[in-house]
Image (cartoon, rainbow, N blue to C red; front, side):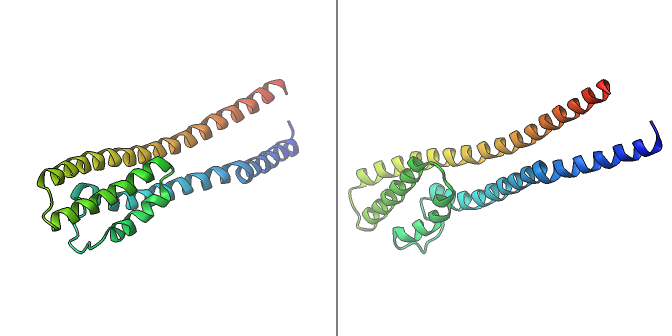
Length: 166
């Protein structure tokens, strides 16, 4: 191999690597950044909503109506992909408001206790689903990295095979 062929091979290799970067790696990097951004936004929104589930809205004494809780839930609801889960959150907030109104009016104690028990259980189940969504999305990020590694292995394998033929 002459010096000119060697320089030409390096130049062609550099061009191929840059094309690979432009066409494929940049897309994967954007996907990873979007996934990370979405996970961070979900974490913040789900954390705020989880406070409502754990404290039944009493962590902030300023709640006077369910719409204030819906305002907190709005960010999380926009980021949740499961429509059934959104419905469960909506029902939870409505039921929570019902319990607060009954408590304020000194309603039936047995019914209040039943609603409280139901809300406590439902809040924990919703939080588990939210947590599962967060961890599910972090597994997707790992899949992107694994896909990248596998494609690079295939690519380097095909270069090695071409070298052997030449």
